[in-house]
Image (cartoon, rainbow, N blue to C red):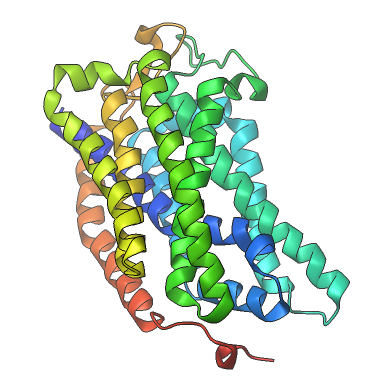
Length: 338
């Protein structure tokens, strides 16, 4: 029971870390055609992500791997139920990665324009669809007792799922704009700061609507009412979001970005804490839900994996911290290689 709960929390933590790290990549990619007015601007935006974006996606692989190893039944049902959405996300991520590499291979405006569009599509599609997927997990997915999904891709595009998709997109836009505020200078920096200031009030409104809608569209608050201490997660999310604006106003851009990161982590755990012990709730019948207790691997497997995680995850975190510190300076025109 304890091991299953520990792995449930680790599962949520790994997704939160992925959204926190790769979130600003999605945000920068979505803002790319709007803030990248010149070729230099576009190259600076790409280079601000260049040394880090692929490392950030390691957390996606880790989160997926943990789902497969710790909760294999959840992995099987989740990936079959959300197959269309997850394949679209996969293709978009591949498209984005290829775009970063291929864009500069041919010195042609037409060639670069094609890959510029791909960078945008490869960023906004995962940003929205990850939100839609998790919104449906929070709400409950129509699966029966055999784990068979009763619906289509359009079933996932319900009001609450789309609202969560918009929330994720806005969180990532704010995160990405703040990242550019840290990494750039001149007009591009000013436009990034202006964008962060414009996105924030919209994000605040959508976040409030999301919290209210969760009361009527999900059973997330059942756990919160049963364990009032969990409301501290919501409080942390609200304080982090407000701190983002305060630090932005003070021009403390790294602190604003860090507050944005905490907002994303708290928003993820808001849903994770609400659905516990379910990992994949059923909207047909709660008894059909896949939980940390009825869908986990054997205790021996969980123990071995826990040892592996305790050894290697700190190494990955240390390496990423070193990478972020190594490339912490601003990206300038002098850094661009022609």
